[in-house]
Image (cartoon, rainbow over all chains, first blue to last red; front, side, top):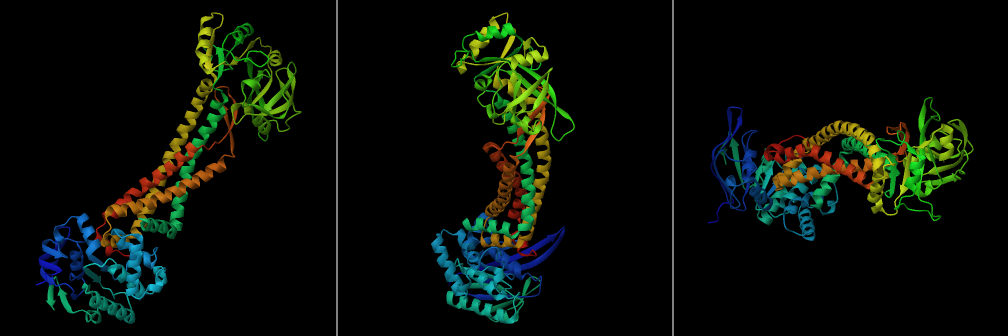
Length: 226
Length: 390
């Protein structure tokens, strides 16, 4: 049996405001097999984004253990986590988070700067990634010269350019109109099918969730339904 | 790394208005420092470089300036017979007794007069001080009341130049030439025949005697010979040391004042730079969070932001040096505390002062950039990704 690519074991996560404890995840367990496209839905503050942050090691659980892409994420130091993230995690953000002073290709190249690839190899990877998202003709455009949908495609190209094990998408359609949102979701779905990527996607949009193989409904730190 | 540097560069370009203000502030402070250094350089050139390394100045024992010194004719004669003095091609010892007096002269365009040094000397003084050259006209004829004036005197006091008559002592003197001397203090002096000047002032002693050593190493033997002769109650100094001592008080005062102002302004500039960089970090919090999420380490973020800060400093340094180049055309005058006479000098830019200014600009931009860069590197990634803005 193939081991899960993401595994939460009885994870609790709380934030503290002064003395007051604010629980976000309560005794949460999850197992995601490789190549799965999982959507996580739920109201604001239900802990959806926290799950993504915990998978990527951007946040640490209060209790429990998390394994992702073969690493006990919750037990690593910052430096090791940064190295691991560069290799195994691709992020797609709601607001794209492209650097406005860099061109599309330079934005996509960013994660590769942390690899050992040569400049020429990086250029090839960038062109391939932008080709996959259908933006080969926008290589030298700055983010301000792109539409919202195109910006998100550049964001997706940046997320996949280093061929990560897991794609984490936080509200990838949250800032797009219907048409652009459907186009972005179709792209994510295609990447999942063709590249067999494991995708964890947080969304408010039921239409977006329909592209996933499975949807977890989250409420008050626990799974309400799936 | 090239891309990260391009990222920093383009961020400076994008924030050109705030970056421009910061660069302007840093450049002004750096320019103040550079101006102070240039003042010091100008003074050094005017005073210290007035002295030649192989020249020796003789003053009466106890006298600290030429004005306060006195050397009798027979003493001067004895000195001229000593060994180890260089000779002219005509066989004359290159040892010239001189009289230095002050006259009050009206400055062109100013109501208050200023003191000017008049040096009674001999035509061989041009050999003794090769940096002094005739720029216009001719030198004075020995035994006449003709004089030559330095370029600073010509531009600041006697604008009519050659042909001007001047009352010095109890005689009328005629300007027959204008000298230049590579920015040294001699450009602020009037030179004429020493015997005529002594006669005009009713003096029977010289102020000083300057001689050229036959070799640089002969200083000690001249010093020993003069010390051993009880008729010569004279002190011996290398000309350069004499002028260095004279410039010390003034240069120290100007530097102290300048550095104090520079320090105060530098604190302001550091705060300005810090605020700019804090602003840069605040407006890019999410961007920094994204870079950290991608796997960039705090050290790399810190380096990129520090580089950005250093770039502001480098541009400011270049601007300041550009300003310094323009300041080279400024001539200032001050009181020479050793002679109480007017001393004109040019602000002088040297490679060392330019490098020091660039180092200073980089230093204060670095100091200003460190706290915001550390803040950026320490940001919680999850919190940074939730931050508003870009």
